[in-house]
Length: 243
Image 1 (cartoon, rainbow, N blue to C red):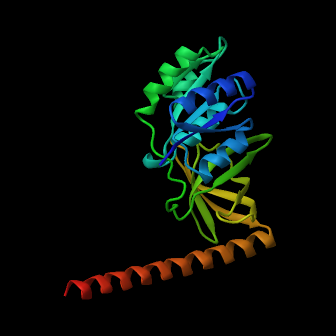
Image 2: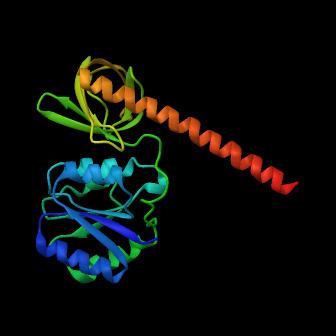
């Protein structure tokens, strides 16, 4: 399958150059300028590479979210850095290669060629994990994104790019995978560790959120039963054929 890169950059000259060079390497490209949009795209799809301008707000969060993906879905991260960019922070955020601004075609191509050896093919059409969604936690005026690991009617567990602040309750919101339904409410942090993992109980959800969440969980359970039955039928058919 074709490799695809997600480019987060607001400089049109840089975007055009990157698109041209990626095309020469037979790598498709998509562009966005918002960190929130980029994180949603990374969770919803699969990208072989992530090219992010580290002078943009929340660029480090985007890179950390990308690096938290499962190994077979983890993109190679190219960090665009300028004279004032803290290069050490880009590596801490998970960058694999540096692209120095202003971009020079020869230097960029060398880095892209080197990164191609580590890129995974685009698997957006293959099966998805049971749950894969972004959750946004609100701490005052600051917002922290995280990846939901699992969810029930009572709460969820998540992986954030940094440790969860020590607060008893936090507003949260997320969209149920495969739907446009927003779940909004407040979570009570019942455990957290230094790696950014945490478990939360829903101390409050809106009535609509509870209805949508319950219906989604029922649907997921029914699909599990159906898939298990299909596997049993295929296994029996295979056994009968073998005999």
